[in-house]
Each structure stands twice: as structure tokens, then as C-alpha cells.
Length: 78
Image (tube, rainbow, N blue to C red; front, side, top):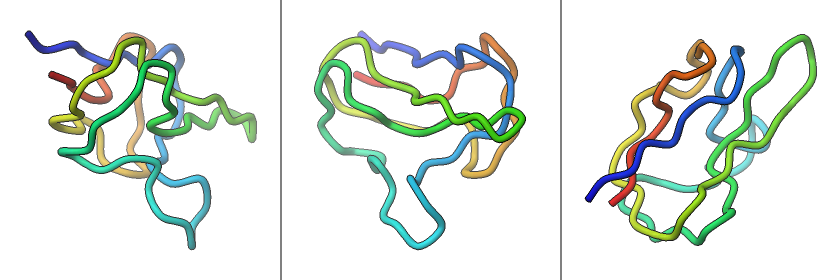
């Protein structure tokens, strides 16, 4: 059964903690409950996007540096 990771707020989604850093997680990676998978920036404020359960991150639905709205699906886990 898949689980959607939903954006809690609007902004720009980042998969990396910084431009020269590795992504928090890649498609196909195992993730733990509460693990950070990305950041959302709104007006120079950054909020972590975390998983609620453990599983495998199967896909990102938003591109790195992509715009998201509150309620948008950011990623899908199995």
C-alpha cells in the first residue's frame, strides 16, 4: 500500500540541504519514520518535509526546485 507525502505549506521544494550537498534521499531508498526527505522554502524560511512512516521512497512527484502548494503530493512511499 502506498503512502503520499504531502506538502504542509506552499513554497519551493528542495531535495538537498544545500546546492553542493547530496540529496536527503533518492528514489528507491529505504526511509525511517520521521526522516527528512526535503525542504520547503517560503520567504527565506525553510521547513523540513518528513516521513510519517518507514518504507521505500518510490517516487518524487515534484522536481527539485519545483513550486508546491499546501496539500500537493511531494513523494510516494511503499
